[in-house]
Structure formats: C-alpha cells, structure tokens
Amino acid sequence: MSGEAWARVTFLEAPCCDGCGTAFEHEEGTGAVCPACTGRRRVFERARAACLYDEHSRALILQLKHADRTELARLFARWIARSAAELVADADLVAPVPLHWTRVLERRCNQAAEIARPLARQAGVRFAPDLLVRTRPGTQGGRSADGRRRSVRGAFAVPERRRALAAGRRVLLIDDVMTTGATAEACTKALLAAGAAAVDVAVVAKVRER
Image 1 (cartoon, rainbow, N blue to C red):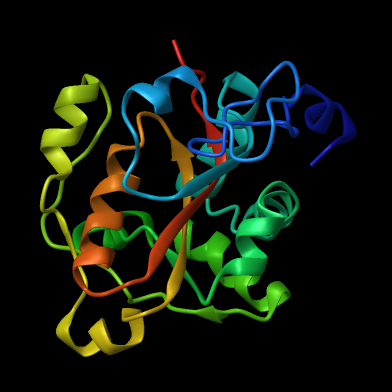
Image 2: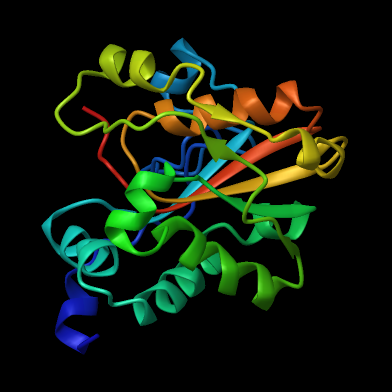
C-alpha cells in the first residue's frame, strides 16, 4: 500500500460512539452514544471501526474481496487492533461474520476470517472461525435499512458442536464493513441465543451515518 493511498484513508479516532463507532467531534465521556444508537439500542454491546467507508477505503477492501489481495488482511487486522484495542483486550473469542458456503466457493475465502485470524493471533485470543454459520445465501447490496434487517433475520446460527464454546464467553465479531449494523445484530442474536455472555463488533470500515 503506497503512502499516498494511506493518506487518503479517513481513519476514525477517539472519541467515538460506544455503540457503533461513529466519531464524535468532541469528547462526550465514557460510554457515550450517538443519537442513532440512543434512538435504537443495538443488541451488541460496543462497536469500533478503523476508518470511514468511502471511495478510498472501498478500493482497498474490494481488492481483498475480489482480487486475491489476502496480504491486505494483515494490514486491516493491524488497523482494527489499534481502533478496537479495548474490545480486543476484553475478548475471550474472536469470530468472523460467516459467508454462506456458496459465496466462499465464489470468492475462495471469507474476507472477515482472513482479517480475524491475524488479529486473534497478534492479540493472543482464541480464534473461532466456525463459531457461526450462515444458513442461507443472500446479499445486502442495494437494500434499505429495513430490507437489510429482513434479509438477515434468522440467517445465522451457532452449530450445536460450538454452543459450548460460545457459552459464557465475550465474543469479538469481525467484519470488513458496517453499513446499518443489521448483519452484526443478526450474528449477535445467534451468539446470545447460544449462551454467549456478550458480543462486541469491530470492522475495517463504517459507512457514514446519514
């Protein structure tokens, strides 16, 4: 990654919303949340994003997704380790948002897992790549916020063989991009139903709240 490309990425620094990771202009105090999170509390406890999702970060993320640039996953893991340091330190397990098996065959990897693996290794936290499964295919592109929530409702599950691993543990869920948070919330509901104590979310990039 060139220095010029790096300079164009808008990194999200503290202070930020404890609920979704949106940056604040001024310090709001520990545990402060933005108006969007005040109006509709998330089922996950905390979220952090390393950068804003725009044309510059999108170009890099798409290279990981579609151009086999898997080395970018290690870079993104370092970004998340910095932006979500508190969440990483509190985690018992690091788990990626899963893709449906048909999408894994298409892309040849799950980009969230490629990011979560080095993050967990660097932090010394157990990596749980199969803690969650996606039970049906689907895409979020072009959907409204309500449409996104409907499309992932019940789409994730903790396999029976992994329920004991989830039980009583704080899970850090990793993904590449957060738009409305619908996918992260659907995953969180599945983890909590399996007995997880709490779920935090960390992503590479977050879409700006409108």
